[in-house]
Amino acid sequence: MTHSRIALVTGANQGVGYEVAKALVADGATVYLGSRDYDRGVVAAQQLGAIPVQIDITDAASIAAAAERIRSEQGRLDLLVNNAGISNARRAAASPEQLADPRFLEEYANAGTASRASLDEMRAVWGVNVFGTLAVYQAMLPLLRDGVDARIVNVSSGLGSLTASADPDSPYHSMFGVIYPASKAAENAITLAMMVELEGTDIKVNLVSPGFTATNLNNFTGTETVEDGSREVIRVALLGPDGPSGTFTRWEGAPIPW
Image (cartoon, rainbow, N blue to C red; front, top):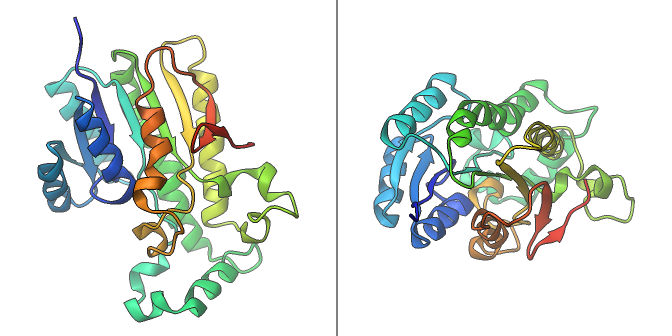
């Protein structure tokens, strides 16, 4: 008997998450479209034929409620795409004019250096990208253990590659700071911990970088379209039971050094 895959994609009301949810629905999966703002999630889910679910990955009660809903309605989870993330917390207080000003972005990059970084800003970004991602994993793991060909796909960034960032000739080198890039390095580390923990089980774990994609995460300054940036996440999410585990890749299946 062929089972429809049960999938949860976090941060899926827009950007990469939306594209991934769209592809999974087209592939025949039952997709729970996770969104912090439930109303926006409802609109996105209606467009795709997905099921909206409110999930704020910084809120333990919200995560628990989402897990319980999937448990009660489906009894299992076959695919978890941890896509939700933020690049900074200061943008919320900035005007569109400030965001469009290159000096704002340059100032923000400088503010991410180890000597100048705001610890409050760092806690906010790490709270989503690191602790939030781990919290969702912990809540959904029992459902994944009951899943069919279960897989976890964590959406990270090549900026989190310590090997690349330590190389003076790498374009990532001058961009590495303790807020967003280091949060992605930490997310990569917790993903590695998941990989190690789940070795010997039927649950597979993959880490993917969508590249510098034009999304709300970077005020749409990315050089790749959201469709192009989503390709590797989609490819890995659609891997079958013979697909690999423990990989860190960018399009098309190119390995990224840890």
